[in-house]
Amino acid sequence: MDHVDGLEMLEKKDYVFDKQKWGRGKSKELARGNNKRARKIDAVDKTLDEINEQIENMRMIQEALSAPIGEAAYFDEDELEAELEELEAAEFHPATTAPAATLLVPARRPPTRPVPVEDELAALQAELAI
Image (cartoon, rainbow, N blue to C red):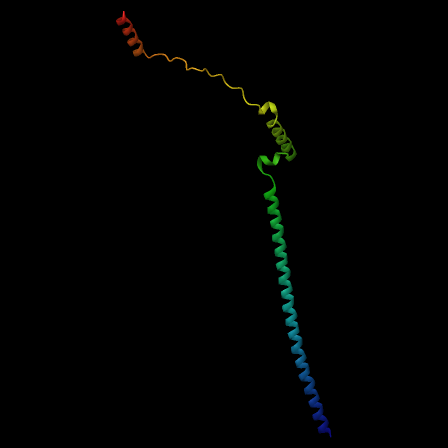
């Protein structure tokens, strides 16, 4: 009976050993799986951080582009609007929109001065006519 008990004990130990081996393998698989998941989560977090950084960069660029530069930085928007309203009001003021006074132009053209050759010809004709 000792031999039978010993064989049964060996079979049980072998069974337990196989199950422990199987369990250790599953534990390693789970650890690798968790490690992969952790790496995937870290990769997602890194990607989200990069996206947020790019969004912040985009906001800074938009602010820089919308900010006035040079002389435009010194203009007051309200002041410019008031000046525009003044100019528009002056445009439609009757004194500024009345037709301009017409220039007086003579009805006939003024006589042109004859050129010297014509003067000589007129003088000769006058002498011959006498």
